[in-house]
Image (cartoon, rainbow over all chains, first blue to last red; front, side, top):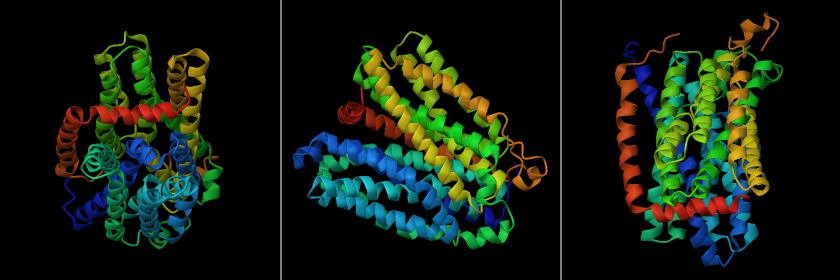
Length: 406
Length: 49
């Protein structure tokens, strides 16, 4: 590795930090919603079910809107979509405070925040970074921005807790809403970051239809669906699984803390390695390692130490898939439609998340344990590794003449 | 293509992020376990079981 020593390289830091901060707030505010459940429902006299419905609706809105937000960012520039997302996020969080009815709350917390997430997280922020940062530094940049986002997620928990303790849940939400507004100027760090820049450098490159006909794109989609399944299943059910096996509840909490912490390191390092090694091979490695980690977790006797080791390992492997998958798409199809294409991938990721949570619940109802769910997650890791192996990662224009073997 | 990254660019994020993470994690462990657990239990309780 050589020191670039150029002003262009130094300028990369501004959009990376801006993207990381925006994702940190967006993912963090999402991550801490559970902290507001009890005070909010008690204050309003609502059933907790309404909160669950809002979160489910939010996930759905995020997934469904991601391809559209991505397309809009490709068409009009990520800058405007991120700005709109931040405004919508602020309005949604403030709307949660001022919602007088359950319907209004669903609209604010479910639809408004969900749509806002599609404009302020990986899909659009990564698209902006992909266009701003030079090709050879892109994977590192995506990994670093993702790690900063993960750190925001991690830091927001004690910050929210402190704000709720010091003031009340309404003030805490309004502070987050204000933070979204304060972050608005950060969008200018991406420069034009828009279709004009992309088109200037990728005119004549593959279009959306080309990607949709590419076998490799669909293999990536299936792999990313598995990623959503494993990630959401583990995050949702690990604490319950730990308690069900007779360990103290605090072990489950520490497990999630470790997972979040190691995720920061993993996201950064896999992004960094993606600039040197073949991204599809790293993805194969991640999915294979997940299977190994889950299998060992199931086979070895459960103890505090085994749970912490598992959480650290899974955390390290948790979101490294995102910069690698996004980077692989831009490597094969260019950055012209990166927002749209990653939006489609992310929709599948969310479908996988939904299946993971539902199937976990169904298995628990049927067998009284999450054991089968873990086994399915482990098996799917092998499937995902096998799906990534045959992906043709050459740039599309070059591969078109090679009978598009995917 | 080899990424053109300086050693500082590679190492600085790890040097800065990990200690912050550990500090926040330790703070969280000592001060907020109970509330954090109630949050997780609420989310898991809301999920089908």
